[in-house]
Image (cartoon, rainbow over all chains, first blue to last red; front, side, top):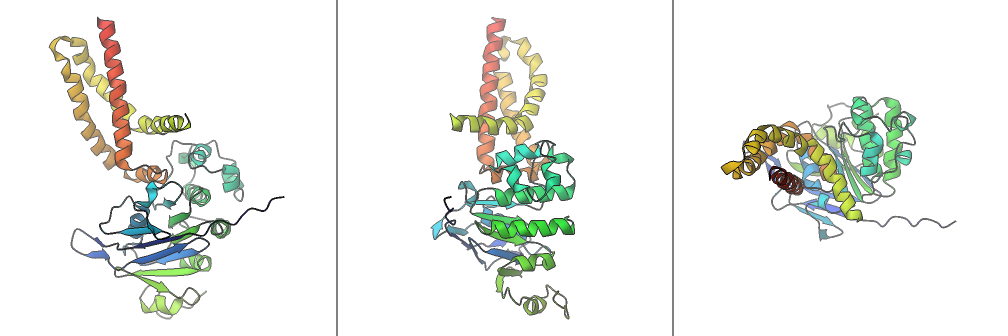
Length: 234
Length: 104
């Protein structure tokens, strides 16, 4: 049997992203983000610090003057217009409610039997409109579809929200498996579930993107006020 | 051919959500004008054109989250609106011609 070749490694870098809010407050100012094939990067930060804005700026539809997004050193902005490069899970529901789950999968060039193999509850509902699924099921299905969509990078904004513990465990396995073939950036407030998945960590603090020690992030997270003082790592 | 089918599939879904409702509303408004004929030939076209900015505004206000679905398929807002507008006007033109042939 022929052995499958490992996926080619790619690097996606973003910098020059500066976003000011209408009131004059600077939301994002000093940003350098690096994603790599085979690496799960985590993005932490307080509510309203600009995590979603950063993801949307990297993805592309949110136009940012002077933003530079590069794939292997080549400019690719807006990234979402380049086929097979990147996809993005927003915090809001992604899939059109009237589409069936199976049809949505086909639109994204995903084989549903593979994407939902760990989740028989979703497999059994492929013919139902997405709108009939519960909020947690929709979130899970959307995340799985984007993980399995044939793109080189995937940005996930709060993929762990609304999920039951057993689903979290299964999704964690899916994220690790997806990282074998693509680069991932995750942001979520459930940092207890997020940290074990990540090999690289960033903290967005006062507009600046700070790289953290992924092996021992707790002291820095306390120092920058993301975790309360005296927090004990799980 | 595959590209054509893909384009038709995209606009089938998008058109269903945007332009079909627009078409029904504009048909209801324009029907009486259309039927009157005479020197009112340009009026339906004008109303049809003017209704598009209003539709674009309403659609952006009512369904902003849905853009992410299309962006994940590689479509920008201008591309989607441009193709939908073009398709809608083309269909309107065909219907217009058929109507003229019938009246004539």
